[in-house]
Length: 184
Image 1: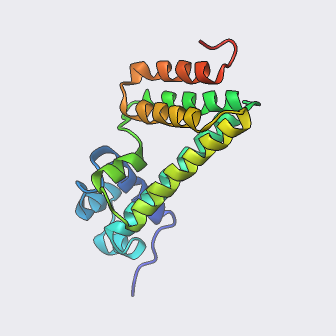
Image 2: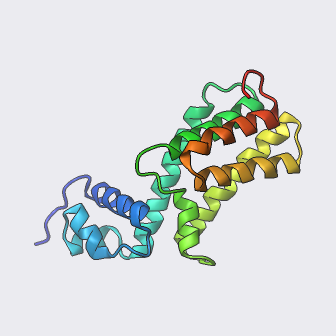
C-alpha cells in the first residue's frame, strides 16, 4: 500500500529545487540533488514532477509569481506612469542587493538553454515579454515613444547583470529619462 504524502510535499520539493536551480543553474542540478535537498524519496519527487522539465517549469512559474508580487507591491504607491517606471526599476535594483542574488531567473534559464522551445523556456520568454509590455504600456501612458521604452528596457537588462553597487545609477537614469521631480 502506497503511503499518503505529507501535505505540502510538492511545495517542499519545489522550494528545494528552486534554491538549487537559482544558485547553480538548471542544467547543473541533477534530480538526485533535489531528492537530497528536499529530504524526499525519488519516487515521491517523480510523483509530483515526472521529469526535470516539469520541475524547471514549476520553478520558473514560482519565480514569476514572486516577481509579479514584488512588482505589484512596488507599484502600489506610485500614482503616475513616470513614478511607476521608477518604482519598477527601484524594486529590481533593490533585489540585486539581496544576499545570494545571481541574476534574473528567466534570463539565466534562457542563457543556459539558448534557443530552447521547451515549456520552461516558454514560461521565461512569456514573463520577459509581459514585463517588457508593462514598460511599453507605462511609457505610452507617459506620452513617450518606442525609443524611450527601449532605453528603459536596456537599463532593466543592465541592472540584472551589473554590479549591485551601480543599481542606484539605473534608478537615477530612469528617473531622469521620465523626468520625475526630486529624483536625480
